[in-house]
Length: 281
Image 1 (spheres, one colour):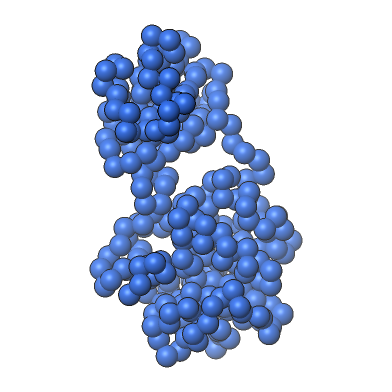
Image 2 (image 1 turned 45 degrees about the horizontal axis):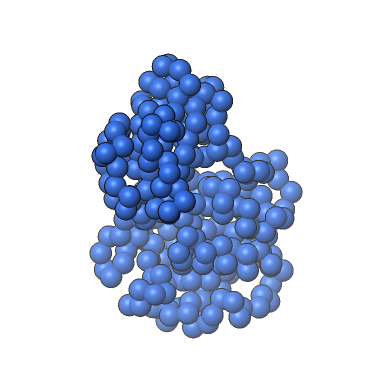
């Protein structure tokens, strides 16, 4: 198995559950199902179980089943008019491959139903997707939905359904989320020389800092400058009143860190969104 191909395969029971969701949400009687990264054929098998005599085209750069054609998805040219592209595309670093798969599929698909990294719920990814598509369904999956090398593989991801057709539902983000809030100030240190200045607690008067990326303890609030490590990334918080300080300290930063796919982490937009959700402010 070639790790560089991002060959993390979907468990059969997961593919079956998602195909059932698809059947409940959409009328796909006249559609051809295209699986562009079919692997061992989990989705192919699930489609055959879920739909009556489905028309399926399954391809993969490195197929693991005789039912799957060996082909590079980016050379695929559709023969049918009504296509739904479905599956678990390779994610790539920072979701780059998943974005590439989505945008190529969007050139000829009415629907795209993909398992994708959690970043697909964020503006940073959605702004790079075909602007003609609307997000009509999204669901966070159990992290143990994949197999790699014959063993369970823990990856945080979601299942999304997108369409270019008219729809009353559109969950797609229309603009970048706010990264500031009137009740507090934040500074982000990303292990760069320019941002090292935020360590100066006397100058910036921050109340506490929290690790923002990596495999660390997100429940630990750092209160003193001497406890900081320049090799670790942080977000620094300065509340404008005591109530806000208590609110900020009560946030579940551990939960926020699970918004990333593999390496835990969160950003300022995640903090603002969570603060507004909990405190309605």
